[in-house]
Length: 300
Ligand code: NAD
Image (cartoon, rainbow, N blue to C red; front, side):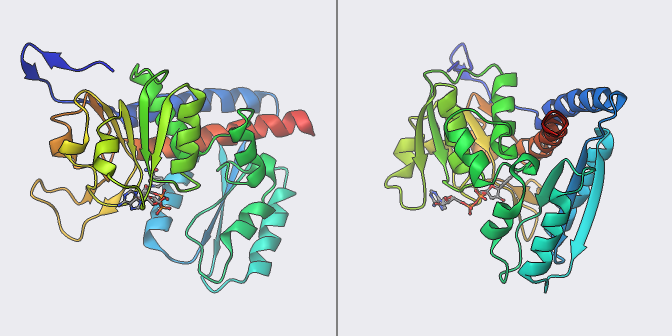
């Protein structure tokens, strides 16, 4: 890892601009989607929103906007929060069989009466653009995959774009969820990082984090990663998103899992929140949708 040191003074961390990298990825996706359209293949993404969670509605709007930017058709299905499993499964079955739909995204969280894993299992693996289906998860484990989950693959894109070397690097992932922590660890491992996964029962999180050349914070706990937990020069990737009840002393209403101001004095690279990992998640969803359209055009 390159320590960003100038003379005797530590420089502030280089801020990794997720918006810029996401714009580049979306532009590449748009070019590919236009090329497919010339061959009669129109990529389409179906987004299913259940209930009236305001944050979920904002995410769905962002996905629809990105589809429009990337020349991808979007189809939105809004279901009442009282919906039962039969209705949702029937919709998934309909979307699985709809040739206009290349990818299916079920916006989480789902209401408590719905077993999310049953719904994910019902999505056709070749339309599973979130890469949450067990078949796609298994393919990722063995390194022979069609899709990668959007947030971890977006992080890998940010790491590559910043010229950060993963091979041989000490990588610490804080969080072991199925959608972020576990696949993140696997992708870093595929790139030959030496990976440690920390979680809520890890003993001495701080000393493990201090060993990291690449530290990915995905614990869902505001500012859990403090400056004393970061190795000087490390790359710190912040996955967390937390809306604060009131603006902090810098006037910010959103923070991540990393204490950004203090950590940017120590780290070599850091992602901001917002504007870091978040835009990449959507860009990679677009990429997966175009990949799905291509796969289906070959397989059918
Ligand atoms: P999750 O709640 O499913 O998992 C959190 C993980 O952190 C768990 O594995 C838990 O063991 C671990 N953890 C909790 N407290 C800990 C502690 N004190 N020390 C160490 N580990 C601890 O969350 P998730 O779905 O993986 O999401 C994590 C965060 O990332 C959330 O803030 C979420 O909003 C955000 N997120 C952002 C994006 C994005 O696009 N930017 C995408 C997905 C999730």
